[in-house]
Length: 307
Figure: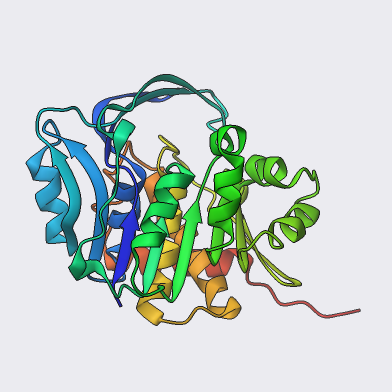
């Protein structure tokens, strides 16, 4: 049931209308691993950090069944750092500082003991790095999921299209789906993107839920209405971690099971936004996860008499 996660481990510094986080732990691979570790073990982490990354954070992930053999430590360099400020609607943000540091020349290496992973998720990195990982896999995983962003569509579209041909599931937000496809309608956008290679497409819409497309099928999952949304950073990666963690646990990659995985991912993301950074997601219990998933079921469950 092993899962390989490729992405960033980072420092974030976040300001929202509800407060400031100070310097905290972030990164796509960090959020994915924390979420997925509730469902599957081992998780094979592939990333790069500097000598300034706290050993306590590495130990905490190891304690959750996350293997660190694929995490490069550059002792004399600094970890990737991002600072951002969110606006009142919490859907828009300004990036204040982006220091690539060790990420600038990151060349992932897949350790021998990671080979044979049945599930692989490629966090939002350069398409060249994502392709490098795929080229290193001696045996194709059962399911390959990738995330990307508008920036790579602007500066590395040719490389991005090559990676798309090799993956099973693409995750993007609605703006990115429109940019990639050139279509405003998300249904038309999905249809076009599915001709580019992926068999499944997930379009994340933040507080408005997520859409899953496959062939002529579509499924919509809502987002949980929450009293407190402190920090949306990492919510998309936490969603991805819950999604692929559940699929790896069940070993079922059918469209029907992906519907459930979307709900599980949405439940995990709803925890993430309740506190800054990884604070909430690393403390969540199995009972809380089950209760939140049941809340989702109740949210969309209804009986109707057809007239």
